[in-house]
Every structure is written in C-alpha cells, then in structure tokens.
Image (cartoon, rainbow, N blue to C red):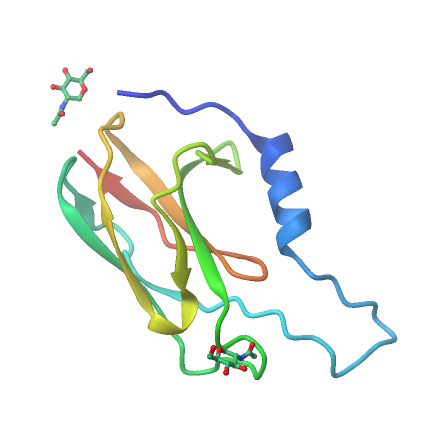
Length: 132
Ligand SMILES: *[C@@H]1O[C@H](CO)[C@@H](O)[C@H](O)[C@H]1NC(C)=O
Ligand SMILES: *[C@@H]1O[C@H](CO)[C@@H](O)[C@H](O)[C@H]1NC(C)=O
C-alpha cells in the first residue's frame, strides 16, 4: 500500500504545463479540451485490484485536439483540496478521443472521497467515489 502525499506544488506545475492559457484579448485560438467525466459516478465503489473503466464525453472534440493524449490521476478531496497522486498515474498517453480508458484499481487506503482527474489541456474532476 502506498500512502498519498500532498503534491499541490507539483500538481500546480503539471497543471501549468498542461494548460495552454489563452490571453483574454486573443479569441478563437482557445482549443482547451476538458471533456466531462461520465464514470466513475458519484458514490460508486471500486474494489482494490479490480479493473474499472473511466469514461468521458467526447461529443465535442475541438478541431486540433483529435490526437491529444490524456493523463489520468487518482486523488481524494480533503479540506477543499485535491490531493492527487501524480507519482502513480492510473493511465497515461491514451487517446482522449477514445472516450474511455481501463484502469487497475491500486491498493490504497479505503476512503469514500476518491476522485479521478483527467488531464488533456486542463484537468477535469470526477464526482467522489469509494475504493475499498
Ligand atoms: C493491500 O496492502 C496491504 C498492506 O500492505 C496488505 O495487507 C493487503 O493484503 C493488500 N491488499 C491487496 C488486495 O493486495
Ligand atoms: C492526427 O493524426 C493523423 C494521423 O497521424 C494526422 O493525419 C492528423 O493531421 C493529426 N491531426 C492533428 C490535429 O494533429
């Protein structure tokens, strides 16, 4: 079992490299693609060691983002902060256009406030779910 650490500083670094911020006075060029996560859903349970499928809505893939790859991180919410385990991504380098990726649930502490965050251009957070 590995324990989660607080990687907020590192997370900020990941987020800042992942986000292609567009200056406000430069319209049109904004291709930030952050599809909403459709699974896991709120309150669902993932048993440790099981295979689960994380899915997201790809109905609106902006032009230029067709070949973009994603990064999926596990984390939990505590004190209004996202504690993301950036050292053990659940999945990496998968095509975002696929709309889903299969993950192996790691042996982590039982909590009911786990989240996954899907990074394309920017991060998108799932509802909270349980791992036991
Ligand atoms: C998870 O890790 C704990 C502590 O190392 C261990 O006792 C337990 O057997 C592990 N569970 C699984 C399903 O691997
Ligand atoms: C995506 O990949 C295909 C095949 O390699 C390529 O033809 C296309 O130009 C790429 N699209 C973008 C937006 O990079």
